[in-house]
Length: 306
Image (cartoon, rainbow, N blue to C red; front, side, top):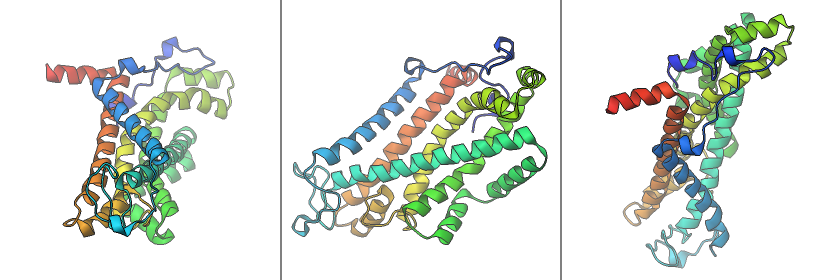
């Protein structure tokens, strides 16, 4: 989560803000991104391209079995080998990226939307909305997020949909807390008071003045939260609580491969490396994006390395 000093300053200054409109955020171009952010973005694009192109070009299907070709090593026909049922590992890895990345993206987007909505409402209306929302957030943050995910899955059962619900709920309190704190600091600015004096409605103040200013902070948190959610998705599937076999989700592939670690180590190494590369790419991009958006953090990092 960004430091408190970053939360205290919105994207622009009030002096340059028109009374009837929100402050305008300064965009971050790809050229301004640090090298590590560009590297992370490139890795993410490569993962998405491979997961899209390989299933279209390969003659094999992710669920296609051929027992006569089981446990084949790396070869021209099977670049990443085959598993215990003769299924092509490259195709299953590419197809499984749709589940790992898809669930991760969906859960973080839903968690950000729900959390941001709850945090803004609590900060703006105060009184009982603030009490209900923030006390619920405090209760959820008092427990480990993984435990909350376990409880949700225990109630709803295993599968793709319960995994999505569990990881979404896991992310909501963090986004709600950030939205609440940032919204309160923005509401103390003069342009919000001016909008109230002009008779602007609550909806207009929220959507035209508060939400545009908290979006940059929410986007930074969202990129950093992606890595945590991706790890949780793979971990729950690895434990048998998420996506179920034979669906080739990366965590589920790791769980199946550990039974044949001595016979075919690639069944563990391949999905393990894929998960690691995904998390490294997200962390590189998220950390670089945070530095690009917050000049103070970038200058502090520069002074620390000089």
